Amino acid sequence: MHTSTMRRSACAGLALVTSAFLLASCQNPDSRPEEETSAAAPESSAPQSATSSAPAASEETTETATTESEGPRATAEGHVVVLSTGGTIASTHDKSGAVVPTVTGSKLVEPLSGTFDKDKLTLEVKDIAKLDSSAMTLDDTDTIIEAVNKELRRDDVDGVVVTHGTDSMEETAIAVDTFQDSDKPVALTGAMRPFDDPDPDGPDNLALAVKTVTDPSNEGRGTFIAFADHVIPARGAFKSDTTKADGFANNNGKKQPQRPKALKHQPLGNTRVDIIAAYPGAPADLIQRSLDSGAEGIVVEGMGAGNIGDELAQAAKAAAKKVPVVLTTRVDHGPVEGIYGGAGGGATLADAGVISSGTLRAPQARMLLAAAISTDTDPAELFPDAD
Ligand code: ASP
Image 1 (cartoon, rainbow, N blue to C red):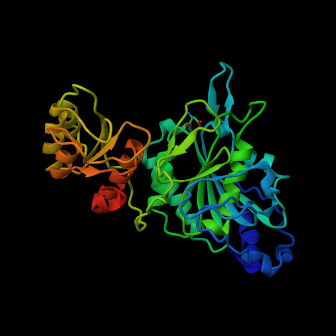
Image 2: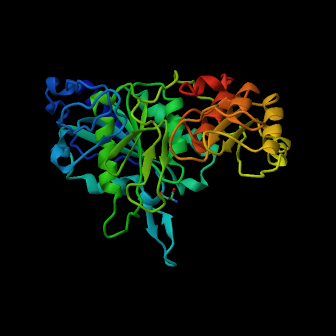
């Protein structure tokens, strides 16, 4: 964690930050005793809530639930940068009743002003975008990756929170994780109810994200999604419910996801990777048309453990000779497994060079394939838990 000297430089540098909102007082940068800066990490190496005083979970646990009984949130300390990108958390109702992103990052953190100990935790806010996340492009993803890495490189920053729409949070989360060149934790969060809702869920989610990135036990663990009392590793996370406040799940089972070595960021923006959904009777030209339109990689969303019909399989096998083809499944949970033979069985596709996504689903597999192509990395390296 940073020292009081670093805290001083954070305060000095604040004037340079156009959209900064500081919850803690900068007048007394030395108010935190030195010993407080090095809180002992819990015995477990599993992700923990910053407020958790419960015994550490086993190494196998990938998700941490927080409860009211875990103590005050004021235990969080450090200097955290919050990057605001839009989404429901930053949205209000317009005159027609539609929900649109309008709120700045500074406003988003205001409800947290009484949540943390001001002498221990400082928040600095920057507005990166004001987008519904379903409207994001790979250029936007690049902007977020670069912004996160820039903040992580600062000596005075302990962790970074990204507020984000939930629709494509799983994509941005794994993209940030893949290019994260720091052990400092990153957490994405958002909301299912808008900022002007009478009972918004954004403030609690944001507080959880801040706790997540200031928790020393999360150092070296990459990027998380902190949402509705759950802290989920980015790899394998997915939006699991269109309306519930507790709208995220993960497909890691009880294992920690294996994170490949971080890649050096190269822009994803020009990399076209298409997702082709398989279904009974899906025609071959779905893949052919995608290639003709310039796709440099294909993610096939198969059925079951990763199987597709004969016609699509012929096209997938032919495509795999020219571009990387990754096979995933439309089923929420469980690994992709090359068990079945036949023209489009997973085993046959694997023999033809089609790469298994392991536990990752189409949105995240596409992001990783784009990352592999843009950095000239063997795509299989980015799916380390595949068979
Ligand atoms: N459409 C919104 C978005 O992804 C949904 C949300 O944030 O919950 O930006």
